[in-house]
Image 1 (tube, rainbow, N blue to C red):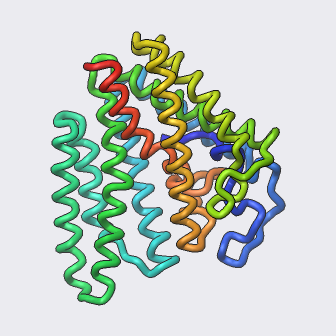
Image 2: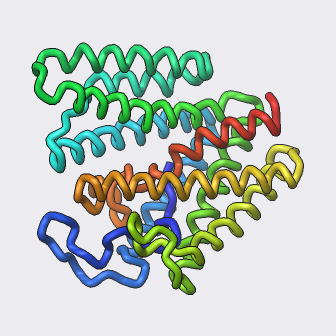
Length: 296
């Protein structure tokens, strides 16, 4: 679950120190090591396509692995930057349960696992005493909802007979949104969209995301799922908005923590969490809209 480029052609803070006192090498206009970013994106894309066109349930394993890494990155960033301690063991184990139980049991399985994860996180934190208890358990509940619960909706796209088409429609629109925004932002970005949150995000980049996302949605829903083109337009526009909001939300989290990236797992991309930001809320909306437009 990853994309090749940053939304609308910018990496937040790419030309500034990363909060650790390091200024880094002078970035390209894209704000990243573009060849490394493309190579990683192609490799991950190949893994996703390979799973979907061989044994499609392997895609759930890719989701589960990505969420485990993302959870560890998020917990590490919270601990290093703010001294917040996520109940990592319950959130990791419960997160895997949410994703894998979403396969046979759908939303009931994911929600049940989420509730058990919350209870386990509350109990796990008891041993460290009262100081910071509310802060830490709140972060644990947030992590459990933000990563595995949201990701379980991507897993729920897989089981239907047309599951490959559903997953591809989701991925095509997110990649189209990301790539269209990147190109438009780099070539013509002039007007800041959210200067206090992500100064380099532009309205031109958003327009590029919207154009590419709507086009990708209309084509994928019509050709892969035998849906109506207007449904694909609605689907594409909705994913562009959720992807952009997810990107802005993670920017706010990083600004609050005073960090540039959640990690350094992926060369040219930063942490895996820096690539999951747009995918996680988009997975929820994808499942909801595709379930409504193309019932199983």
